[in-house]
Image (cartoon, rainbow, N blue to C red):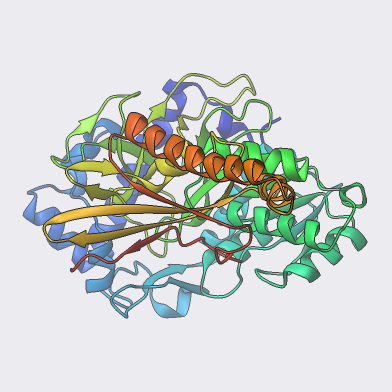
Length: 447
């Protein structure tokens, strides 16, 4: 069952609500935020020109650079005395991206996160182990308040402390966990190292986000931890986690809370709005935020939208799992490559583990990509057994097996993605694990 009735409105009812909220937020930012008044005037558009949700294309885009240019308080639509929370995401230029909340925004955040937990089947009977980071990062507190809103018992352990995470999973009987998917796999690795019996862990579901991941990685997480792995999506600039989430019934696209966050898909090159089903860059307008609403914010995330009603009963548009960020995309010899595509190819092979690093270098005028990937412990054990034997023929066969595996991965990357790559096979546990967002790419090319 959905958390509230707005998740099951008809398209006509939803469009009416969106139109009303868009009109109000345009009036709000035009009157209160000088940046938006200037942007609206440059486009020769006034709030009165916005009659319905279809008029959204008349409005200007907002980019991440606009948040940095107006650092720290330039995009606030409320005076500081009404701001009760300030979060920030790390910035590559030294300045973080700042976001603000008033009391109504905090309640909205808790409510959309309650939808997220309800989508995942979490109720007041569950114990939620929250391994998202607390602090300036929005993940920890966003998940915390949403879990409390549905009445679950929350363990605010935050990220890291992997052995303690496992201890609490056992002792506190946690039934749900919130973390990045890569950290969930790392927890499994440590469970194996500690020789913990998985039967002593009561986990049923995990809510995973904060980094792109593939269907193949979902399968790994579900099989290893024996849980349902639910994809959730959010970004600090819009609200934090709580923008969209999969339902446990279907796991077929993420229900986007479009009554509060209006989504569009655009051509990232031209800015043209694209129809349902077409892939492009996700753009979101936060229609219900009061302290810092954003108009047509370009997320940089590549996805598509599906308006069909889900079998769970929700009518909210569903976004496809994010394929990658437009600014994370690598261009290798003219071919567009997303790290998630490489991951999808790697996990087709049972002989490798879901731990990898992509290195990009420039040799002369040519770009070269090298994929470092761990072989699976099982494959390594089988090799070690034969290497220890005195049978030189068996040893030679294992050398051939490594060469074949490397060639198979190279061929799959070429056939599926369309780019040549070097492959370096690494022993188990040789690639550094992450207790937060996994670092997948090292780009050594001159800037």
